[in-house]
Image 1 (spheres, one colour):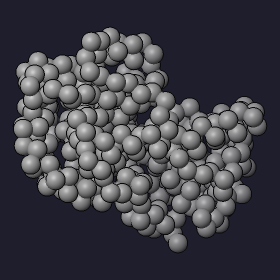
Image 2: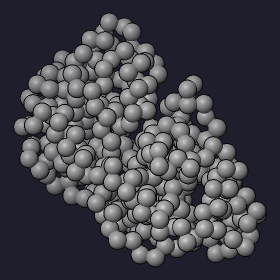
Image 3: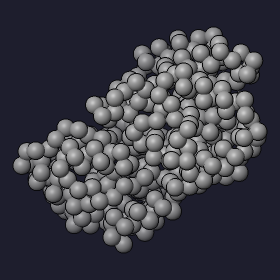
Image 4: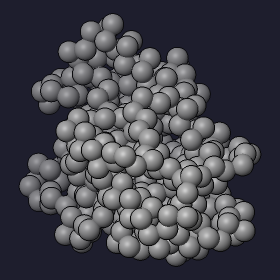
Amino acid sequence: MKICLYSPYVPKHFGGGEKYFFDVATVLARDHKVTVAVHRDLKPTEILEKVARYEDFFHRSLEKVSFVPAPLHDGSILEKLRWTRKFDICIVVTDGSLFFSAARKNILHIQIPFTQPKRAFSEQLKLSNWRIKNANSLFTRDIVQRAWNTKIQFVHYPAIDQACFQAVDKKEKVILSVGRFFKQLHSKRQDVLVQAFAQLLHQQPQLTKGWKLVLVGTVEDESYFAEVQQFAKSLPVEFYTKLNRQELLSWYKKATFYWHAAGFEVDQDQHPEQVEHFGISTAEAMASGCIPVVVGKGGQVEVLGESLKSLEWQTVEECCYITSELMQQSSDWPAWQAAVRQQAGTFSESRFAQTLYEMIGK
């Protein structure tokens, strides 16, 4: 089949949503002709450069995927209909906006818990054009179903790379956090993590001797990044902003604990878009045996599952307390590592592919 994929975030962003997008592309490209639609203003050299960056960032080949300039970003209704009608399936990641597609089957992926209703007749008509809808978590699904008054048939969890599940060497005194540096929407709140680490060092100077906090992620907001760096001044905090996939996996294997603060002090009933919608980095860290200590909101609750609920926190004090308790009980680490790796298996590549093929109807 001829399948078109489009995301308004590609090729601008390099995060979990883009990993999901290219996981879909590479899985389908095994058996189908896959085309990724990109902004039509991009020159061929620019497209090649962006593709190379994605291949390096995610450490996978996109050789079987075609990248083609298309009118899906800024074209007229007729242009979009003409362009999409040559495809059997059109899969789109939405940023909240919708358009009409003339592909034989249209699949909409929703990765943000949008709360703005779509009451207008034109919006409901567009929604009906996307017969198959899926969300990246139960959290996102439930909110969007209510807001948009539409049925979302599938929850399509992102996949954890099999490489994350490989045998883990001896862990080091590392607390890891992975996420882009930005302030808007579901900010990863690295500023809060630095604050928590400083407090932990102050409260437990002997227990935390030799420990360091490692923050990994691309920089999208330079001023926020500089702010976090200033907070971390004179602390054992390391920043890595340009790691490739293999280098990131190396940190997953080294780290003992994984911290995540997206959604800190956010009322998720009022602002669900500001908490973690899923949180693939937490799941990947767990697959590598990192013990997660994360804000218990949004999709992170699903990532940890009921069995790991005791590792969730809401305040800096709780984060420090849970982490210090775990540090003192190092003899329990193997049991924790086994438990978190088992939970991470929920998000395997095989399950990802199975759900994907259910949606396209193979």
